[in-house]
Image (cartoon, rainbow, N blue to C red; front, side, top):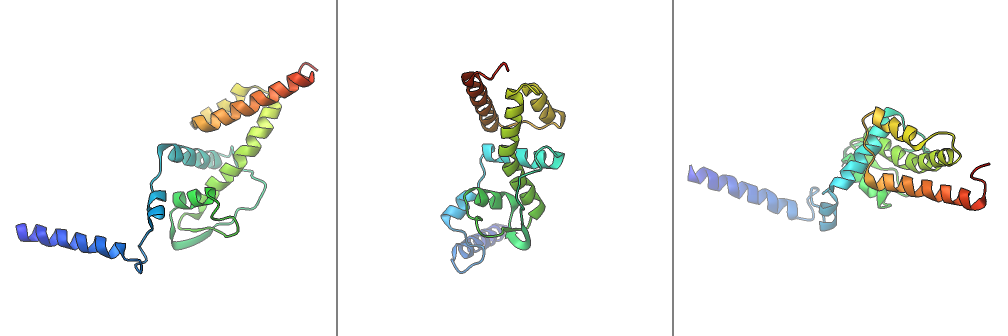
Length: 170
């Protein structure tokens, strides 16, 4: 029994050493290994954009999003993080989860337009802030605090600019 456990641990050690060799296709640099770890806030924002896209709230981004399928490509979260870091600025991303990556990218790009247009409508008193937030609650989507703060700051800035210009009650 002890010999079996020793052989098993030696095999595991051999696999770990093979993964550290740079000529191995599974080899990752320290930066790449760190990027494969996702924080809770990153996961929360990733799921928010994906759910919002799939529910049809954030679907228009104003540009064509091309994503290629590659069976040996990276997972969708890793490619999204690389996209946020600007690594896919002039290159079409290749991933094994193209629909997920496309949905998250469209959701992220749609968020800026969504915030701009809805805060314009709220500041002009066409609809209320609660009506907008209820759209997300209807589908069971929680807006991450970071994005909600961005929404509130943009809204207050538009209210203040409208108030300063004297056009608030016209």
